[in-house]
Length: 263
Image (tube, rainbow, N blue to C red; front, top):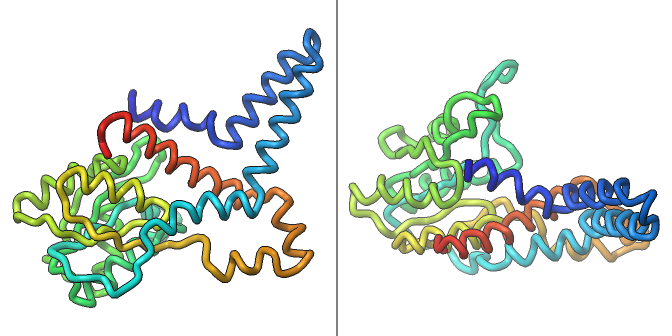
């Protein structure tokens, strides 16, 4: 139940869910308190406009992504840990495992192994049953990294983790058996601040190896280069709304994990 509520309740804090709540409030108040209803409607509109705004979105995302930007070649470690959330299961009509927008995690983990950064690749990720997909994300990622040249004997699987805290605790159990503490932690740059602190809390000497950067220096510079770009970045956009939501999810996660003593 905790896991379900952890997915449900934050939805009403994120822009789309908060706007829906405000619109529902406006409908409830429109006859008895029309001014309050109008205010709720305006707030709902403002939330959507802000959430889909290019500068708001880029600012939130960048505030997380730039916390752990590699400034030099990554050192060697005892294992490469790749967090899930990067694949889609081979459910029909898909012919094979597919990567999603965070698929860089899997590709980058394989790249680091092939560069001899560590002798093991730990793939961590279960799968939420109610989403209707089969197998585990760890098994999906294993198929991909093997196809890229990582040998099966170098791959360790955590098939059950459903959140970042479970990633860290389950990987700890796997690596404790081998006396491994120094790891390269691979996840999306947006997810790295929370992930790194959770793994460090579990006693790992975790070196951040972020990938899947969403905001680049060039994209930031282009936002104000022309009046067309300025207008388009002022107008709300569904993709930017989704990215704003992802960034807010990380800040909510940092708060909740901190309160639970997981950081």
